[in-house]
Image (cartoon, rainbow, N blue to C red; front, side, top):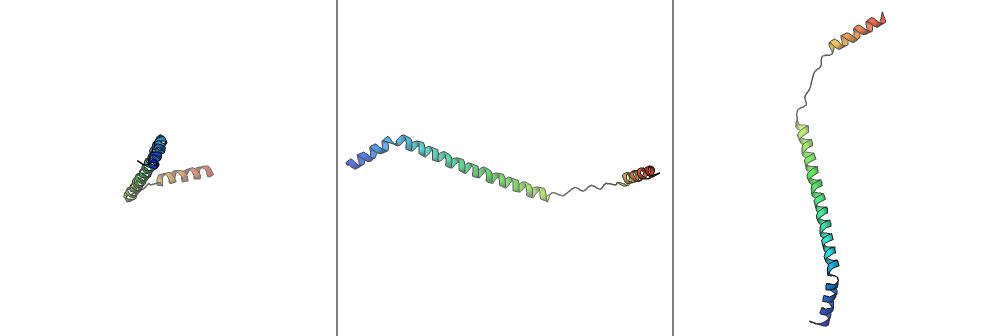
Length: 82
């Protein structure tokens, strides 16, 4: 080995722990970012699918006959005016 290679190896060996820590930290940040994007994408797809399913369901319509209530209110108003 030439002296230059020996010096480079010594520098690399001296900074090896810091380099490994930095690589692990960068890998963790990358995994976290990818996981967040994946979770957000899956959530968005699920929310969109739920919206589509809900919009395709038939709407239940209920008819209410309020004739008796209106008659009662009219009766009350005629009684109070006398």
